[in-house]
Length: 519
Image 1 (cartoon, rainbow, N blue to C red):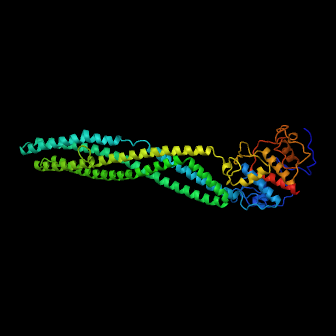
Image 2: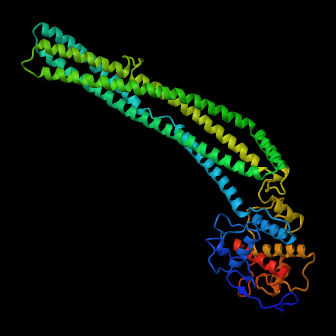
Image 3: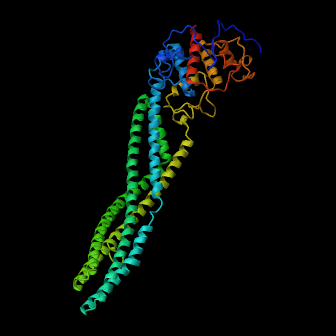
C-alpha cells in the first residue's frame, strides 16, 4: 500500500473509531445537546449538530429530538447539501427544515392510518355480511309449530269438545283427557317460544354488530377527513400555483382512469344504504312482534297452570275446570296467533316478522357483497393507474419525485449541479438510504462545485482501505475524503463503502467540509 500524499493534508488527524469521522477542530458553535434531548453531552457529533442548527441546516426531526441514528435518506442528504451550498453562497435558507417536514409527514401518516382503519372496518363489515344468516333457529321454530304445537292444539280442541260433551253427560273421565291434551298443547307452545328466543338472540346480535360497524365506520371517516384536511391545508401553504395546477391535473387524470369503477362503486354503496333502512325497519318490527309473542306466551302459561291446578283439585266443580280449560285454550290460541300469525304461518305474528327480517337481511347481505366486489374493482383500477404513474408528467424531476415533494427543489439543484443523477430508469429513490461511498462522492462533488476546481494530487481510496478495490467508482472521492480529514474510515484499514449513513454522520461530515473550506 503506497503512503498517502499529503499536499492537501495538514495537522494531525483525530478520528472517532465508532463512526470513522474526523473530530472537529477548534469549534466554537453551540452544542447539539443544548437543543436536543436525545443528543448526550459530549457525543462525538455534539458540536457538529450544534453548528448545523445554528446555520439552519437542520432543526431535528421534531421539537427537542434529532434522531442521531436515524437513516439519512437520499432526499434528506441532498437537502442538507443544498442548504450547505446556500450557506456558503450567502443565500438564506428557509427557517423550517426537518421539524416542519416531520410534521407534514406525521399528518399524512395520520391520514393514511385513518384511511387504512376505515378500509379495515369496511372490509370487516363486508366480510360479516356476505354469508347468509343461519336460519336453523327460524326453521326450528316453524317446525316446532307445524309438528308439535299445531297438532297439540288440534288434539286439545278435540279433547275439549269431547270433555264438554262428556261432562254434560256426567262422564268425569273425559275431563282428565282434556287436561292431558292441554298439557301437550303447553309443551308445544314452549317449544315454539324457545325457538323464537334463539332467533331473537341471533337477530339482536346481528343488529348490534352492524350498528357497531357503522358507528366505527363513521368515526374512521371523520378521522380520515380531519387528518386529510389538516395535511392538505399545511401542504397547500407550501405549494406554488404551478404545483397546485400540476397536482390538480394529476388527480384529474387519475379520476378519469378510474371513473367507471368509481361510479359503479358509488351505485353499489347507494344500493347498500337503501337496503339498510328496510333491514332496520324489519328488525324493529320483528323485535316488537317477538315481545308481543313473549307476553302472550306467558299469559297462556298462567291460564294453563290455573286450569291444571283447578283440575287437580278433587273438590273443584267439573264445570269450573271446563271453563278454565276454555280460558287456557283461548290464551293458547292468542299466543299462537302472536307467534305464528295464523295456522299457515302467513300472518303478522312473530314468525312472519322474523321471516321478513331475515329476508331484508339477505337483501342487505347481497348488497354488501356487491359493494365489496365494486370496491375491489375500484382499488384494482386505482392500483393499476399508480403502477404506471410518472411524476415527470406533472412537473416532477423524476418518475418517483412529484413536483410538490418537499425535497424537489433540492433534488433539482443536485441534478443540475451534477451532484447526483438519480439511481437510473428515471428514478431518484427519494426514501432510499445513502451509503458511505455515495456520501463522500456527493461531498467531493459539492467541494469541487464550491471551489470551482477538483482536488488534485490525492491518492485513491484503494491505497488506504483494504475493502476499496482499485478503480472503484468512488475511489477518487474516498481518497479525497481521507486526505482532507473528512473521514478516516471505520477502523482496521476499512472504509465500509456500502455501509449506510446516519443523520449524525452526514451532519458531522458536512461540518468537516465546512472546516475545510473556512479553515
